[in-house]
Structures are given as C-alpha cells and as structure tokens.
Amino acid sequence: MSVRHQVRNYVEKLFENIKEKGLGEHTIYCIYSPVYVQRESLPANQIDVEEFEIIDTKVNLKDPESVKKFLDRTTREALENEVRGYYLLAMVLDRDGEYFFSSENPIIEELKDDIMDRIERLKEE
Image (cartoon, helix red, strand yellow):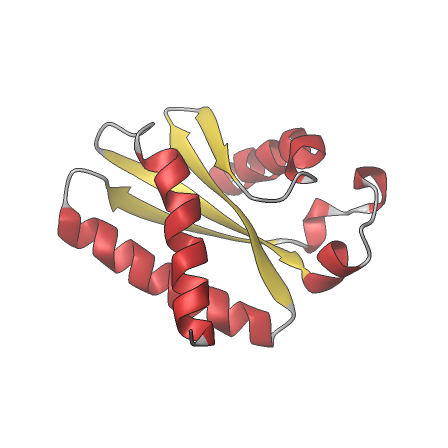
C-alpha cells in the first residue's frame, strides 16, 4: 500500500470517529504536532501546543461532495505536513463550542484542554 493510501486510510479513520457527532455544517480542526512529540514519547507537560499547526475547515457533513473535498484536502495537507516535520495528531469537530476529538494517540487526552484553549484563541482572531 502506498504512503498516500496509508495516509488516506488514517485520515478517514480519524474522520469516522467524529462524523456522527455533526448535524450539518461544522468546523473541523486538524491538529498537527511536530514529529518529535511522537518519536520521543514526551510527557504532556513538556509539549508546547503553541508549536502545533492547526488548520480549520468548514465541512457540511450531510453533503457527500463537501466530505470528499475535506478528506482529499486533509490527505494532501497531511502528506505535505509530514515533509515539513508535522504529524496529524487529531481532528476536532466544533459543534457550537462543544469539541469532539478523534485521535489514535493516547497523549491527546492530556493535551485536550490546551488544544481547546488554542482553538478558542484562533476563533477570536
């Protein structure tokens, strides 16, 4: 299986875990962490979420074309970010200020509050 297919499968798996939480059009945040966070198994208190890349995208979960565009774009961004040294750590669905996380990485639990704070600041900008 090619790297592109592996990344697409990973993106789809993360998306599957949050798509049922949505009711229509929502913002989904893709959270990219520096690769060293994964490699070095750092404790959460040594991870600075300010170093994370966060990309927000509006997606209409009831529109298959909107979902396909989101998955295509996220796959492309995940591949591009890996080259830059960033890993797709999680997806976060924003449903009117209520956040639903999808990640295969257990470290995300300890970072959720910091990530939500960062998302709130981005929304204010």
